[in-house]
Image 1 (tube, rainbow, N blue to C red):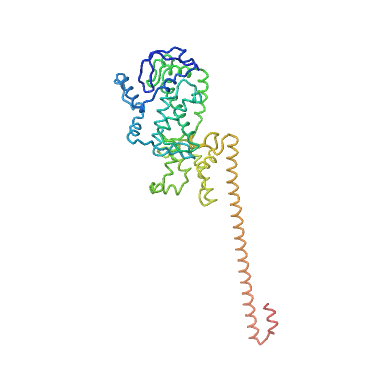
Image 2: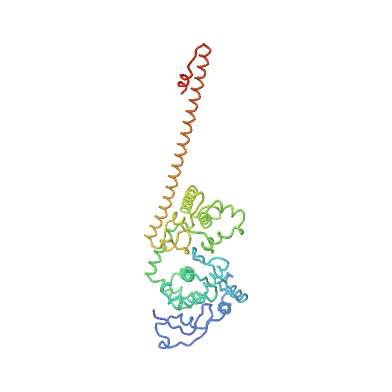
Amino acid sequence: MASRIRSGSIRTRGGAQRAIPTPPTEEIGEHELPMELNVAQPREEHPSIDSHDGLNRSSAASCSNRKRTRGQTMGIKWAKKRKSEKVKPSLEIPKDLRRVVGDNAQQFITETSQIVKQHAPLNVEKWSKIPTYIIDKMIQLVNEKFNLPDELHTLGVIIQQLRDHFNAWRYRLYRFHYKKYKTDEQRRAHCPNDIDQEDWNWLINYWSDPKFKRVSEANKANRAKQTMIARVGTMSIARNIHKMREPIENLTPEQIQEIEQKPEYMRLWEKVRRKRDGSWVDKDAEDAYKRMEELHGDQLRQYGKDTLSTERAYTLVLGHRSSYIRGMGSGPIPFESGGTRGQRIRAQIRAEIEQEMAVRIQTEVEERMSQREREAETRIAEMQAQMRAEMQSQMRSMMEQLSQMGLTIPTQQASKEND
């Protein structure tokens, strides 16, 4: 991809401008990415603070007549915190959730978003087209700001978070700036303040391309078919799960009672797919919860308690996707990736549970049959004993009557008759 050389000024990600001479093509090379100029420049200790000041100075006049809004996140809060504490915050990344959770999760999300906006190039088709050295630079900055867990899955989680920020950033530009206007001329005349005009022109050309529009319409149609949309706000499902797993001493009596009554997968489903008025987000979410109730009941009958993890329960109830576990967001990975193999492993899990239930049922049936046989034998023995007692009583009565009549019966004969 040929690079377009900027002339006159360079707009930083914070919005400040500085004049530079236009270098000749031979000096830079026609295949250099424009972002190399930003990446190669020395970084300030707190670039977010400097860029924020520059943005305020350059846009003070234009903002004076506009309605006051929250504005862009600049990361000033976390920069001040790091400067005062002088200790890098540690990140918590559970292997099963594969997302950053815990006390420093929000700081991580905010600061990685700023890293992407300051260093990721916009004039690429997608994340995978970003040069490796730029991604490495962003990872290095994350490592400089945070204490990362020494785990194999950590790097993948960091890259995924940077990628999510990149996609979300591009989506917001597309939705709130590109779609706002009907013609490309209007769009070029309204470049967002925090990006360079040439980057914006590149995006306009890319989004106006018929190929992109076809893909966009197909994706839009697929999104329209989605059901059971989670209602989690700004907190990810992984962070909701982590919060639900707090030590029991930190929970209220009501929360403890709820844990005793329902497994995690049912409580999580209610939390992220029930509205505030108690209704479900849609009929599919309600039906899925009913299937979870049935699964929970089967576990109680089989084991006396529910032994299923949230990952396994959702795989059984909701099905499988090749890259994620349905119902748990984009963090946790499935038991095995791949559509066909994923279906096989889900079928295997279900078969194992059904086999265990069949064995349990067979055992219960055999125990009941054995118990009934013992009860029948006891009743028969009691009836036989009662019959013998009645016969002996009748025999004694007959002997007493014969004795009164003066008749005698030989003892041996009576004994034989008694036998």
